[in-house]
Image (cartoon, rainbow, N blue to C red; front, side, top):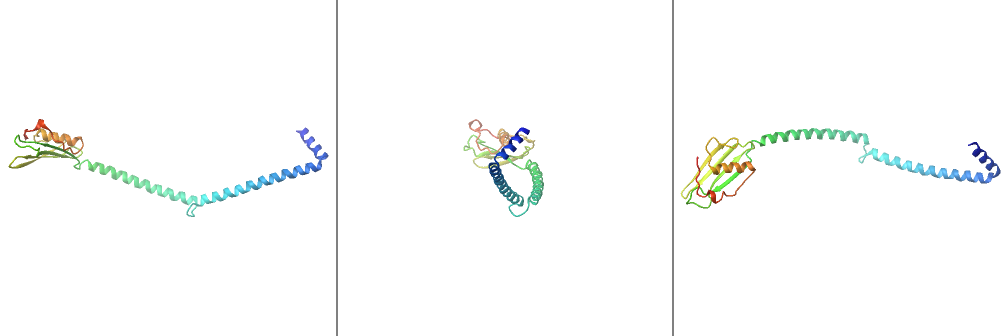
Length: 187
C-alpha cells in the first residue's frame, strides 16, 4: 500500500495540472451520482408518504386498526352464521323432504295406472304413506304412518316401493310396470 501512495504522490508532484483536472472530474462524477441518489430518495419518500397516508387520507396505522375491527366483526358474523346453519340443518332433518310415488293398476279391469301410493318422509324416515285406489265407480284413499322407514300397519308392495323410492332421494313418477298390473293393495 505504501508503494501505491508513494507513486501517487510522485505523480501529483510531477503532473499537478493533470492531477487537478482528474480530481475535479472525479468530484463532478461523485456530485452527479449524489444528486441522482437524492432525487431517487425524494421520490421514494413521496411514494412512502402516499402509501402510509392511504387513499382516503388516513394513515396506514388507522387503516390497519379499522381493518382489524372489521375482521373481528366478520369473524363474529361467520360464527353466528355457522351456528345458525347447524341449527337449520338439525331442524331440516324433521321436515318432510323425501317423496316417492308409485302409480299402478289396483284392479285387473281398470287401466291407466290411476291408483297410486305416495310416501312423504323426513330425513329420519318418518312421515306418511298415502294410497289411492281407483275403481270405475269409486276412489278410496288410505293413509298409514311411517316410522324409521316402516309402518306399524301392514304395507302393500306398492306402499313399500313408494317408501323405498322416497328413501333413495326424491320424487319418482315412474309406474311400476306390467308386473304389477292387476295386483291389489293389502292392508
